Image 1: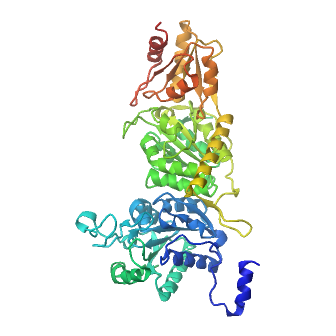
Image 2: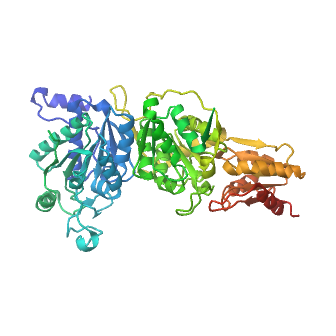
Image 3: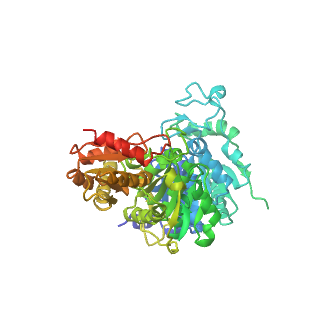
Length: 259
Length: 352
């Protein structure tokens, strides 16, 4: 008996209110318990399922915690060098303009090492979607300072807290990108409450749908927690996120299409 | 037939052999490649994409993206720009993506000079980026070969799923010669069995990666790569021999140095010195076996290259002490005259 058959025997189809997302691979996620990556992955795959574009989509995994995103997402994917995902996306979309192309990038990838690729892909108005996970820290390498690390926030490379006099200021990259003519839709979302999860999914869906208009780059920033990197329990990290991250990275649309 | 610059020949060949995309960043002495493409507007001719990237780093990663979809993608640059591409080339090699990288070499190190040089030999044939890998390296020594090697590069790149480099130089890129151009070929729309083109219901998902976190898996990946390189070494060595049948001495030279050495041979033979040449066409794989054979029936070899002596190391490895192997070449963009090479040949190999 397969797992699906067993599930059907335990749960009657008419009573099902929630199922494992179809386009997620049936494997264990490598993310720490409590981290927002899993929810973000699920939302992207739900959108791909609802838009029925599994055969039309090519994703790009970055360097960082989501480096092996292709292990979990049942779609064609490419793994990029650190920061270069928007360049790969450009190469893909320019040669296959009929496809949906998205990158999935963390703050270090998107806003530090890949800043040039980020800005120029957006400035060219590449018709791609960027899913940008901002948790203010380098998670994969063990909690070092990120471009988005908050003022005074401790990390393994800013043990006394980020000092803006020597380490600069938190980089609000999406608000910067909103000034570029090439960006079409930029929004900042979060996934730590059910209500926010629903809103985030709507935003991701819009971002993908807008690709077909060929009017420019669409970006969904997801402000998320990194309980391991922040050295907190998942519950503590959510509270910390609400009290510290959200006042700096305010949720909501940053750039919406002109009617 | 047309009269073309070496750089223009590469650009026209790319359009005519059905390249899907060119991504590049301007740098002397090869900017004519992207300028020619921009002027020709190949999107109208064949649908070929031409895009000026924000950097060489971005350009090579655009190549990666397009190559991962099974497209014929290329980039070109000159020495400092090629250094910037090395990260991407290492990733392309490990992800086994076919593509073409053109290096119109200028003098270095550093920002160096815009004059021709051959000082990127080590970088091209010994890896260049991090990790154990090789790319196939072709060395044209005429504008016709600049043209012909573009299609040859893609034949080899797709046959072995491996990056290929055309290692040219500032002289080859800038000089003009007549070129016989080929018929226009259509771009291929073939969906390759490994390419990321969108996961349809009839197949498993495809992913392109160079990441293998588990040691045993990464070791197997390396073993498989080395096995592939072994097959390439066995099957793809290319070279040209000029007057080697009766030669007492052999010049080994590629690119512009091979052209200069043609005259050196003529001058030497006029003086009764039996000089011949082996011109490697593939610098990797290197014609080691043939050089070893030639060493058994000659008295010495001279590697002529515009560097401090890079290829000469591979000649010495091939010859393995059978006969003396010397090097002559100038650096920093300086080009030797045939007489200068002949004089140095005499003092290095005929002194006894």
